[in-house]
Length: 258
Ligand code: SF4
Image 1: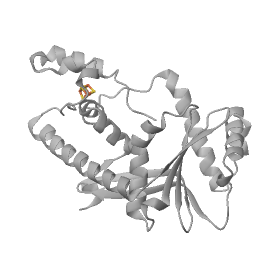
Image 2: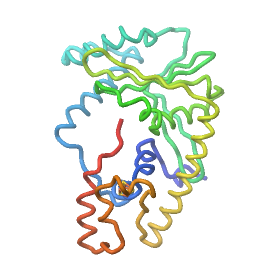
Image 3: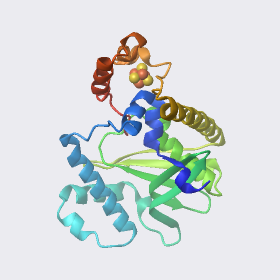
Image 4: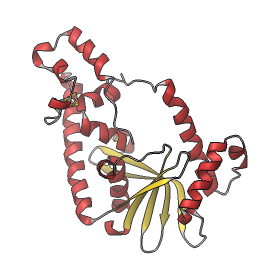
């Protein structure tokens, strides 16, 4: 199938689809997603600068100008290098920043971009920079589709066995950087494959219904009790006004973002 016919999916799509299909519809199909709050924009810009810094460093491009104007960036880089000596370049080991891979499944194309990939003869390590201080719980991070999809795609598109792969997050903003590392296994790989098949099969069906029958994407069956907005979707409340109220209210549901 030509690439232009494929629907691109990232880990963000998968996380939101998995957590809340109606919110997925709102953000990606109805294009009613909210803009970042002003308070988030500074953090996002700092995150972009940090990623640019790390990419330029890998390419051995000058980074002094970036560091000279941002003491927090300078301190964060130095602290990271001290905490993670494995990030020091080694001419004998292949590595690449912003390494992009794609993998197709049915009509869907998954794209992953690794902040840094280090490929040794016996194992490969994916690094991801998180530009905030406190890591989420390991259990949450392990379940996140970024961890799962990044490892899955590398296993599918390389010669490495799943057991030879790992992914390390570094949480770098100010202070002492912290890391979380996740290994991978054949069993996890099969589990991810099965869940991707189910998610994409559901999405294909829901997209078809949405486009041809104007049917809304359904709720998950297991989160209604904890969803403060669920009553807004109930059948007896499906009036235009309720729908508007819903769109306004559901915008407040936090996206899963790590
Ligand atoms: S119950 Fe709430 S969280 Fe669950 S799918 Fe519906 S709107 Fe989303």
